[in-house]
Image: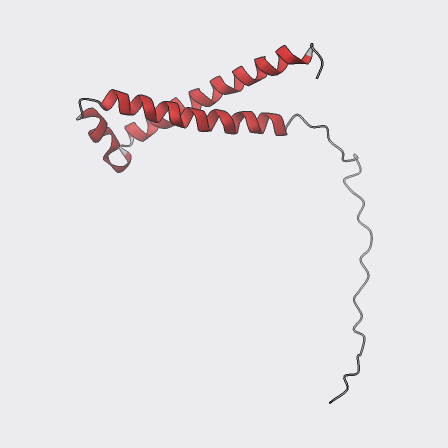
Length: 104
């Protein structure tokens, strides 16, 4: 890796981590909005509910950021395919071949 590509990769990593944490915030917000499994009632009724909400956001953010960055890395590769959409050769018909079995 050349010196020139380093900052670009770091910038890309930070950008996709931010996207992952924003997606996590939306996800956790929807979990609370739809009260999935009574989660909003549990968090809002607890004295340490904000810590639980923060932990839920951070841990989901780590997962979503990792997935987002993985998708970005996988999409960086060059296409090996030709523009001809892959010529498909004719597939020969399978012809059964009789086989003699000897009895013992």
